[in-house]
Image (cartoon, rainbow, N blue to C red; front, side, top):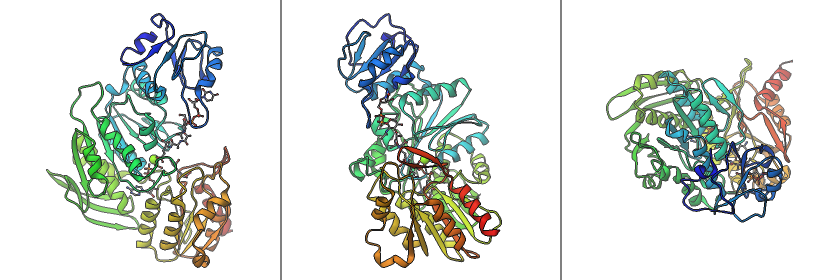
Length: 491
Ligand SMILES: CC(=O)N[C@H]1[C@@H](OP(=O)(O)OP(=O)(O)OC[C@H]2O[C@@H](n3ccc(=O)[nH]c3=O)[C@H](O)[C@@H]2O)O[C@H](CO)[C@@H](O)[C@@H]1O[C@H](C)C(=O)N[C@@H](C)C(=O)N[C@H](CCC(=O)O)C(=O)O
Ligand SMILES: Nc1ncnc2c1ncn2[C@@H]1O[C@H](COP(=O)(O)OP(=O)(O)OP(=O)(O)O)[C@@H](O)[C@H]1O
Ligand SMILES: N[C@H](CCC[C@H](N)C(=O)O)C(=O)O
Ligand SMILES: [Mg+2]
């Protein structure tokens, strides 16, 4: 594509040279990936400034540069005020606006995004539609999976992924949209058809100034709904009517709103809810009909997730019996309330709860059906929201009988200081918890101590297969370590 064509929809930019005859074969935001014929977009990041890599990009073959300032160099420079946002727009254009051709569902909220995307995948697959899913665990196109490094990828990778989906005949794309992505403009250029809001509770206050700022970022998905190129059918905002933030989310969109709830009045509701250790059942009520759902998913929070997915699918005109079939078939999502069973006499559950609210929900659920003692193994991520640390530790102590505080991706922080942040003020409860930065040791300790009917919750890492210490990711999988520890105990 010609560089001038790539910028034809961009209202404000300046150029140092004529750009009409420059052919662009690829767009890159990483100088190391630049090849002959690439356009290099300089992003001023949190760690380094992409503007410093222009010469490397040119050495690697860049034929033009997009930058936020004039750079004296041998190839034309297109100067824009915000390269991140322009990257999203030109990537969408370069890949021929793939999301104008594939229907797209975006799911945002503090907790439940991954779960809701996989519920939606199961529902649409049940309806015989080929899906693509992008989120925390992986990117998935039909049955094939691809690794990811972010929940919501950068704008360039994202548009490339949608292009690949289109090439592979995907009929519906479903993605998690993180607050970081919304704030950083990673999803500009995405044409959402349905936007889903799960809930808002504390997280990411390292990145967002305060909870209002965080909510504002989430609301951008709904403000963006229906604001792009195509004129396909109606767009829908699917909103949790029981969440206190739902009013602001509703006010953020001009599109059709569908609410779901268990407590407040809503278009889609759940009633007659029963939850036990083997699953959940409820009546799914819609304005036209209702249907009984018997799901293997456990916990009230999963009723909300199922309502969110059902409401989105109903907006997408999927028949209720198909939704029922899908919700009843799904056994669980990797690393979410995943039971580790080797026929031992106690239960081990691996879960991705890494926020105060999710930890509370999971422990409350476990408490409802626990016959023995509850042990929880939990840590808090390094280089992340410090204010959630004491809250998570307090929740662990409130709902479990015994807590083992340990490391969960300390990243560049000192693991001991993270643990100190968690346990400050908990001196009076010293007999209820232990502290060890060695996560493997914590898992072994809990498993060795467990007796018949006890339940061990290993929280925070879920599907993750690494422990990040410094900038290195070491192999580490809670599920494998737990299995190993159970085996060792039984010897
Ligand atoms: C804070 C944040 O969002 N950081 C993201 C950001 O990294 P960064 O700003 O540090 O990038 P940088 O290293 O400064 O590089 C700046 C630019 O220079 C370029 N560069 C760099 C080196 C070089 O030799 N040549 C070169 O051109 C880079 O390619 C880049 O374009 O851009 C990277 C590339 O897109 C992201 O992978 C990275 O996510 C990191 C891994 C991260 O941990 N992000 C978290 C906070 C995040 O985004 N989380 C959300 C939410 C998850 C949830 O919901 O819980 C997510 O969506 O994942
Ligand atoms: N609707 C919900 N409300 C509260 N907690 C939930 C909900 N759904 C799931 N959880 C809890 O949150 C954890 C993470 O769930 P999930 O991975 O679906 O959320 P997510 O929003 O994708 O998280 P992330 O932001 O890390 O990608 C689960 O393991 C469970 O403990
Ligand atoms: N997407 C979240 C995941 C947190 C998972 C937890 N294991 C941690 O590392 O804190 C984040 O990057 O904040
Ligand atoms: Mg997720």
